[in-house]
Image 1 (cartoon, rainbow, N blue to C red):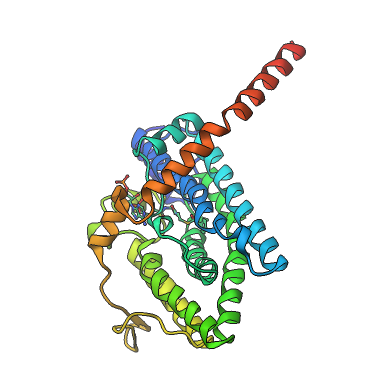
Image 2: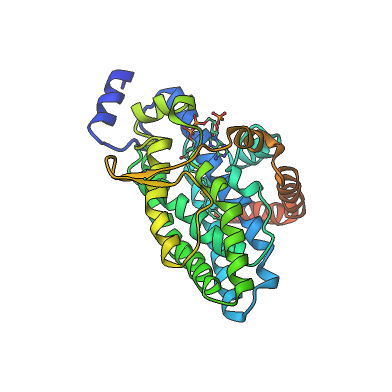
Length: 307
Ligand code: FAQ
C-alpha cells in the first residue's frame, strides 16, 4: 500500500490495524500521542493517590481507591495499544524519565484539600471524556477500541467528582468555600488540557488529515465549557471567569483568555509539581524492578518448560 491508498482508506473511515502498512510519520505521531496519553493516566494517579489515606469516610475512600486503580488500568491499555506500533514499554518509560515524552499539564498542580478530589473528577475527568469520546473514532484500531472502554469508566469518575462537589457546595459555609476554592484553582488548568489554540497547534494539521484527532483543540475546549457551565450553576458554584457569557448567535459560551505563558511553562517542565511527579514515578519504577525481573524470569521458565 502506498501513501495515496493509505489516505483513501482513512477517508473511507476504515480503521488502520497494527499489521497494515502505514507511513512512518503516522506511526511516529501515534506513538507520541498515545504514549503521552498513557503517561498522563499513570502520572495522574499521583494527585489523587495523595488523598486516599485522608478520605473523609470509608465510602469515599473505597470509591477513590477504585478510581485511581481504574487510571492504572487505562495506562496499561494505552501502553499496550502503543506497543502494537513497534515500541517497547521500557523505551516508552525511558522517554518519560528522560523528559522526551510529555504528559498532561493538569497533573502538575497540587491537590490541597478534599474538595480537589471533587474538582478533579468533575473537571479533569470531564475534560478527558470530551476529548476521549471524540477519540473513540480515531483512525488507529487499537487506540479507538481502548477509548471505548476507557470512556465508560471515565463517566463514573466524572460522576463521583461531581457528587463530592455537590455535597460540599450544599454543606457548611466552610465546605462550600472549599469547593469554590477548588473550582477556582482547577478551572483554568482543566481547560488548558485541550492544548494550545488551533492557530498555535503544530500537530493538528496532520492529526486531522489522518483522522487521529477528530476535532480540534478549540472545538473540544468549547464543547467542554458549554457542557460544564450549567453543572456549576446547578450546585451554586461560580466559574472563575468574568468574561464567561452566553453568546446567543453562536449558541455557545464566550470565555476569557487563558494564561498561555503559564500553560507553556507547565508543559515545558516548570509547573508547581513537575519535578516532584517525575521523581516519584522514577522512585516507584526503581523499587518495582525486582517485580519486573521476577515476571521475566517466570516467563522464561515457562518457555523452557514448553519447549
Ligand atoms: N499538556 O500541536 P498540539 C487523563 C503538547 S486525560 C501537556 O496541540 P496535539 C485522564 C503536545 O503533546 C489527559 N502537553 O498537540 C485522567 C505537543 O507536544 P510535542 C491526557 C501538551 O497532540 C483523569 C505540543 O504540546 N489526555 O489522563 C498539552 O495535536 C484524572 C503541541 O500541541 C490525552 O493525552 C497539555 N495539556 O494535541 C487520569 C488525550 N497540550 O509535539 C487521571 C490524547 C498540548 O511537542 C486522573 N491527546 N501539549 O511533543 C490529545 O488529544 C492531544 O495530544 C492533545 C494535544 C489535545 C493533548
